[in-house]
Length: 144
Image (cartoon, rainbow, N blue to C red):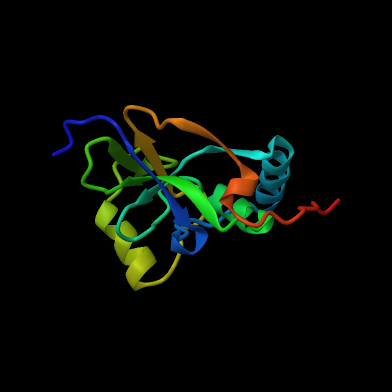
């Protein structure tokens, strides 16, 4: 089923993305400012295709909200895909992916900052999409 190593890339509304971990608010603001300076989106967000759970890129999803973006480019995956591996961030031990769905979709909770580490093999492609193409971009003003 997964013999093809190419990734399925799509554009999804920001409302489809389901956060999976807490974020560092300061890092979100710095990232939003950096993305705005570049005037382009260059990192695809890997998500679980059916649920929208963010596998990696929670800071970017929050930055997109600050920028007023309506859509984001993403890589559609699922946890059964052998190209996806998940470990505990601190220990490197395998992480039970069923607990991810349970925690986020059933309990409606996000994990603490840096709980899971998702790896993708082969690595994810990059993109270069002008921000204006992703929706109504508000002028972002960082605090400070």
